[in-house]
Image (cartoon, rainbow over all chains, first blue to last red; front, side):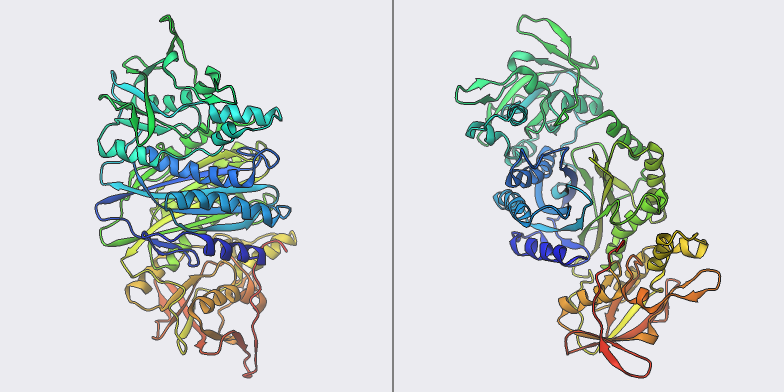
Length: 314
Length: 314
């Protein structure tokens, strides 16, 4: 192991917040963890890759670190789970300055501290080129209570939390080399909906749930495929992000297909309050027996909604 | 998500062995797992990076896949744990042919099946260049029984399993573009010592344990640092791998500093049988109150043993 890696591990070990789930953290062959009796374990892993998920010339390292952990916490939120510990595997090319790494860790640990999630381990390696980070988040939920993608039934309501399209719109501004005002940069630091997901699970509200990381259309398709249902979405009902000084709504396409918002999308046979844990919850459509996704305009015209897989830089 | 990634996920989902710990596997926001009541969770993550841990022109893809999972299983073995599920995050550049991926998965799943470890999730991504794989293995051990690196005391025996230096010697042969006979290629497919580690833990034999991934000298240093002890190793006692048609012993340097053997190194106050679960166990030295590592020659001369961090291609 090169000395720089050893230094990095020591640095993470020093900065990582402790947590009650961690019996033995960084510095052994494996971390040792405990979760409450009667709980099941949730595990999610997400890559963050330079040139694919971020660009060093566009994204500040604090933001890359924050978003790296957001991806994992958001997956646990989408199961209605409680995050217990995170693990970071980080590969760095030799041209990545230590200051970049410090700021990356600062951003990641800021979010870890916010949710009291200890960094319990991981791996460091030299990369031949660029930066590759893999975040693992381990969580838990009471036995049999984790919310899956596969539980939706025809005739249920479809809900979404917060608003959509802000992250894709901010990214478009970065691509056009336009300055990012506060409103935009907020969209680059999405807060995973952990409290909201947990509240919904406790109330047994959602029949199926997913987080919106690939865009509304793609993630809705995931629920529909796993649950064997179709969906109709009311275009007018989709809560669009407002951006810039003028607080104008983002284009519908950003809200439909833009990724990285990390809001929750879920189905329920029940009426859900319009605000949960301080976050708006909006009914945007209904599940159907007929397969496929459809978009309904304000004049009632229905057209096929195609899931456009979100890719950051294309 | 590009279509090719979706295809890859489907492929893994189809090929992955099922397992009793997995409630919900690939295809949701997170996997849902169960471990036996009274057990603690073990988690380890390990990168396998093209150009750092393997070279596509040297290592067959089946071997890369096998070794990728070996790294994780070996960490669980070093805790005396039971592997429960694996997660694979795989980033591939667009020039990596599907046939490479198929063979890589075949090698990885061959080992997964051997140890009945289900592949319960992971992530796929496009990489800008090369191949990056991160393997996560989740295991378990009875509460308070996982074997740490930090439990060694002065005056204990130091043991090693199997023999050392085979992997480094085979790698040197690859580097020199020499053909690999069966004896060598066996060293490129190390079998993690899961049964042996579990047996030792059940018998409460080891006070501290680690797997030899970075080389004997470096991994012994890890135990010594975490346990605040020193160590004396008898050069003559180190079990060296035999290679090639002539079955000659590898050079001492390979056995002392070569990585990737995935044998277990442990300390114990007790006498351990010379064979456990069909694998030789050899006493190679003792822990000391005086810090640092020392190597004792056959004539009794003692010299400082420097931990030479193992790097694959330097």
